Image (cartoon, rainbow, N blue to C red; front, side):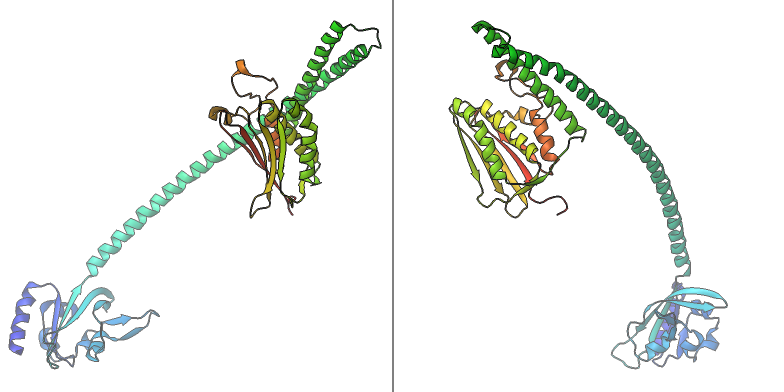
Amino acid sequence: MLSNSLQIMDILSHRLPDAMVLMDRAGIIIWCNDAFKALSNHVEVTAIGLELHKIFPVRRKNANSTYTAPIVELFIKGEKNVNGIYRYTKKDNAYDLDVHFDVLDENDPKSEVLVSIRDLTSEMKDIQEKQKKELERSYMASLNIMDDLEKEKINLQREVEKTKLNEKRLQEAMNIKTEFTSTVSHELRTPLASIKGSIDIVMSGSAGDVSADQNKFLSKAKANIDRLKRLIDDFLDFSKLEAGKASFEKEWVDLKRMVDDVIDIQHAVAEKKGLVLKTDIDGILPKIFCDPDRVNQVLTNLLNNAIKFTDTGYIEVSAHILEGTDVVHVCVKDTGEGISKEDIGRIFEKFQQVGDPSHRKTGGTGLGLSIVKEIICQHGGKIWVESEVNQGSKFIFTLPLKAEGA
């Protein structure tokens, strides 16, 4: 058996570049090929009969950087899984070696062991060189990315500066517009008040008798003056809200009582059109923290609109707490003509009056719902509309129950 093994080793030694050693179970060298001789600096005559681990002290490196016994010795002692890649140093030269132990006959405890040793040094160097080049490429790519990011950062900073400048200019323009609107509104209010006062005096008969025809024309003039005053008030109010200059005097308010008050004021107008006004308010609705005049303005505007655009049926104001939230949900529902899908998307925009102008029954500035939206938003709430043509409308808004920061 030994002679056959030696013959096999002789054949392999001429065909394989790997270092090969045949040893017994005690680690004594029986045979070695030329590649092993070159690697270990031992000629065959001096290597035969020596202990492999002494002339070839390849050791395993632990995690703590200490070295164990030579791997050949570990194999002889029966340690499993000793095959692997190891570092071997010879005359200040380091080698990366792939070492494998193969028992020729597993059933024979005295069977020889073939140790094959492949020198991976050049391959490892190639791998390391490739890794180094890859790292260099990655590093250069990272530098390029960093350079691109820096350029983008500079461009972004420029865009931010431009945006800030545009915002500043926009704010200045809005301030100029607000000041102009305020000035014009105040300038118009003074003569309007004087004209209205004069008409009231004439209509009262203090300046002399007034005929029926004269009274009719004076009444029309007074109605138009009142309408013009409302338009001016809307312009001024919206300008202040839009510029963030409107004042809000918030306090704890009983929303149910406020709704009832608005309903009472509008009841006569609704009754004249044959409409029913009703409410659906939570019985345990807590007080809300808001500006009562502003929220009253919202309810009044929505109820006015509902009455204007409803010819038959009813109008209902409901208020409920949304389950699991600190938000009150208020809805003004009517059975009126409804709103088209196209108009719903722009109904809260300023200067918008929805529907066909040729069939419009009422006029106005188109600022009412814009003012309503600004008031609700500045209370920390939301407002939206749900409607279909000829199916009535629901104007819904929410208000937080708690004060800001509470």
